[in-house]
Amino acid sequence: GAAMGVVAGVFSVGTLTIAAQMLPFGPTVAGYSRYELAPDREISIKLMGVTQLKAATVSGELRNATLEEGRTGLLLPVDDWALGLAEHVSAGSLAGDRSIDSVHPDWLTELAANRMALQPGARIVARNTGSHQDIAVAGLYVIGGTVGQQWAQPAAVRTEKLPATLATTASQSLLVVRMKVDVQATGESDIFRFSPGGVRVVVDGKEIFAIGTLSDGTALLRSRADDPLFVEVKGGDAFANMVFLVDNGEVLEKNAGGGLKVRAGALLAVKRRALVDLSGMEVASGRPPADQVMIKGEQQRAAASPSQAVPMPGQAPGGGSGVLSNIVIAVGNRLPSAINVGTPDASVSGGRLKGGTFSLTDRRFSRLQLDGVESVEMMRSGEYTVDELYAPANHTVVMVSAIAPPEASADKWAWADTLGQFALGTDDGRTIAPNGAVAVVRAGASRRMVVAYNADGAAPGISRVEGGIPTDVSLLFVAPAQSRVTRLMYRGQAIQTAQLLVP
Image 1 (cartoon, rainbow, N blue to C red):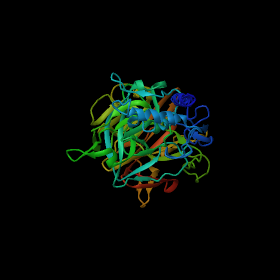
Image 2 (tube, rainbow, N blue to C red):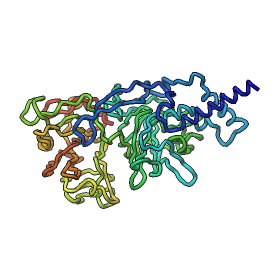
Image 3 (tube, rainbow, N blue to C red):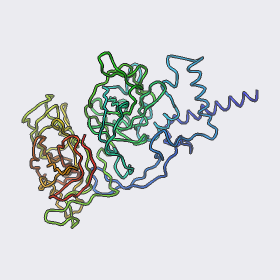
């Protein structure tokens, strides 16, 4: 009787411990963490539309880069014991359609990963039921060979070096799951807050966590399991292109037509209870459309080591105010705000907007001139919005994001007057002239947007907004695929270095 009392006590405490780990406590529960956590650290970052550095604390971060490292446990692992018993009977005397480990191969790790990046206002659980689907799958894609990659988080947050490319072996592929998010899955402000640790592919009792997103359909933005990601869901469904590094035979197999499909029994699991059966789903070769994944502040920039300001015309480098500062070079083709073009057509030539003109190719802007006469809220209102820039075949849009100089005496529009004097330099000695620029402009109480873009030629002129102050600026370049960008140049002088392989 005494022995069985001890056993009952152990499993009762184990059950309570598991229940505690299912609550929204963050990475630690009563001082216990499933994984080793790094010490808190202070960083300085710069947010979109803000000219001053913001101090922030990174806390609750994994000490190691992956969930395969740094795992800990209770001194007396009663939670593992209780779960082990449940897994055993779920495949035996209490068996149902599926055993526990066919959906939750390591339930305690899953719970810990789901709590790590929990943000204020976030729902800890997504759910799919017969009548409602928080998460659906809009398509599967496979990418082999080499793909360009970079950290999704700013350099101040993610300081470790990342190779410029990710090369898969002959037996591996990057599986892209285009995840559709319903508005009912969101929390505060209609934002779906999640992390790669909360998104898994499960097959044959093994779980594969997402390694990042393919946000614009071309650039692999890497994230650690505990990096926070956001999808704003307003006015309809939104999408996240989640990327998994998979062994081909483990997840994929040939279909009758010689293409690829997902093996039977595989499923996508998001935030514990949103399960999507992937069995037999066809996998397309190529890249998905752009998604709506954001990092904090959507265009957050690191400022721990700000780039030197570009000199004003007539000034020596480093001499006084500059025309741009805090420069970040990255692949990207999305405008800061969508624009209602008033038509559902995929191709338009010479369309007109209030304060501008546009042309569309494949439902993306191939030409756009916008003079900032209307607020961004008014521009994006309506049914037929577009927020992507077009690039010709075998080319990709590269954005050089920056801010106008914060000094009160600086000419905050000088970059627009000298746009043609910027260029990207490549490792083989070539230079790439700008195809345009876009800037968010503060004019009184409203936010406006000025754009000049030509996918097929030199940058058109960009207009100043009378009385407006540009806060965030992006120079737009159409770069050949597989070129390696090594620097941004101004008047023939390198002002910012980079190691960007254009996908």
